[in-house]
Length: 331
Image (cartoon, rainbow, N blue to C red; front, side, top):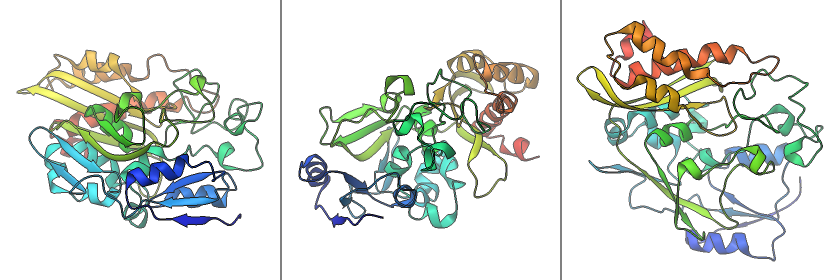
């Protein structure tokens, strides 16, 4: 492992200036450092300076919520979000999305911004022995290799799945990512990421030197998240779903639905959202039918067609949780 310096900026603006400083060959932002340590161990990056923003804050409170807005500081930990009663009241999908992520130790260190910007967990990308497309190589090894956990949506050429649980939850809450050092001071989360055909070496649309300071989103009191994992603790989802609803009694008048762990970006399911409109939650058959289209348009690989069966289940359960019927999911 190469040696590197550690810089401690006094503000996010200072951090941004350090990122842009040409005297560094590779400057990398460090907060909780969870993914960074993995990347260093795996030999995927060799920075000459780590810019430590762990003690910086873009907001007065790490997490806050009002009737009109939810605010999450970039350096708020996943544990901060999961344990916030204000978040659970205003936008429960956010707390639910992170409360089961990784282990308690990771949740106590990993930050909101770090979770959004973590690199893919594809085992070919993470293994230094494979010079895959994402690392500048000639091919995506998942196409002919082991692709059980890879994407079923998107046309490649790289078939990663987006690793963040928080991103789909923020998308259904219409979140905005606030930045320092960027040409624009903010970006809607819908435009934070790009598919591999728009640039295979990176995942986000952040300009060089941009640093996330905080996140804002709309309250979504009728919202829910559900992930299906091979083992329900300390594991990555094989599929996940985030849902935000507007209800008139038991009738869904509006829905926003986003899938996770099935595409290179948080994958919005507009067809399911449209199908859910007008569905009475008391009509289980109608609800099942509306959610059954969750995998429409999917292009599974040789070993991951099972995700097409699981995704409608995850979506339906997220809808039930959003509607306050978690007991039915757990029964």
